[in-house]
Image (cartoon, rainbow, N blue to C red; front, side, top):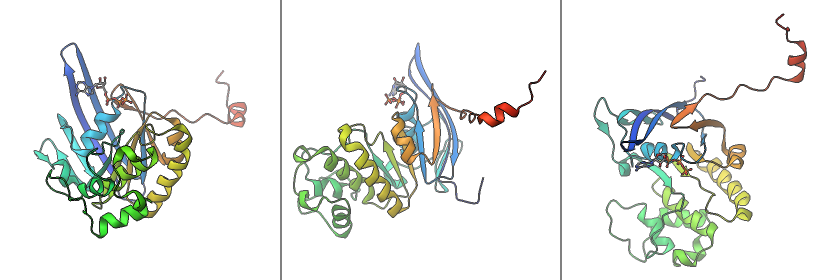
Length: 244
Ligand SMILES: Nc1ncnc2c1ncn2[C@@H]1O[C@H](COP(=O)(O)OP(=O)(O)OP(=O)(O)O)[C@@H](O)[C@H]1O
């Protein structure tokens, strides 16, 4: 490994389900990449992994560090609450509050409690993200009045408003119309270049790997599988000893 700091250092086990249909998650990975993608089919354990990193699911065993900060250690009984982990989480369906405006949804990311922010909620951080994600003109609209892209950007602004130490993205483009996905990928890439925090994305869409998979982890049946060996070049095959 290079001298770059480790962005995500995860080793965890978790059993979920009921007798007879138990799913076992057994995950180990370390990444120095700023963009890490966990790629795998439906049911592989991607969401459970992301939820454990976020503090929304408590592992049975293991340790989780993000940017060198210990967030969970079963042996030492350390379990930093989700809100105190300072991680921005983008849910697959965005999970916007339907009764709150765009501005209030973003301001919610700054709150400690569960009370709804005031309609005029704001402050420099909310204004900054409204501007940065081109939401200022829809700041007082409700989620049902937004386009898919605006809904995604509102959820992203809410995830970023608290200056998280890292961003966790659950299938960030799957709820978008396919015609919007490429443009939105480019926008997210530019945003990540700008803010510089590490990102962990889960996806089953190979198109996400091309753009965001600086490091790709393949997940199947609850485990990270070793990467496939690179295909040998035709020259290497031609010059390889036959072994006879
Ligand atoms: N709370 C739960 N209780 C019991 N089983 C669960 C629970 N959550 C997930 N599972 C099971 O764990 C397995 C992994 O689920 P997970 O949601 O992590 O998969 P995934 O890779 O994110 O799939 P998808 O791409 O479809 O979202 C699945 O078999 C699922 O049924």
